[in-house]
Length: 81
Image (cartoon, rainbow, N blue to C red):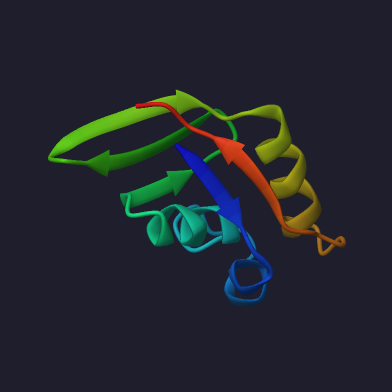
């Protein structure tokens, strides 16, 4: 599934939050339940099943920029459950 992190997610995101950062907000908008974005894993619930994947490099880079107050721009990434 392609996740599109848009400017609205960046503007509403909470720095340092694993469940309210721009990536988690974008995952929610894509229809995934209970997203949690951490430095090692991204987890979510879909169709009553729990999923966990290693955090992609581009997501880690975005998280570092966003959490440290750096300039963050919209991007897309893939998750497969």
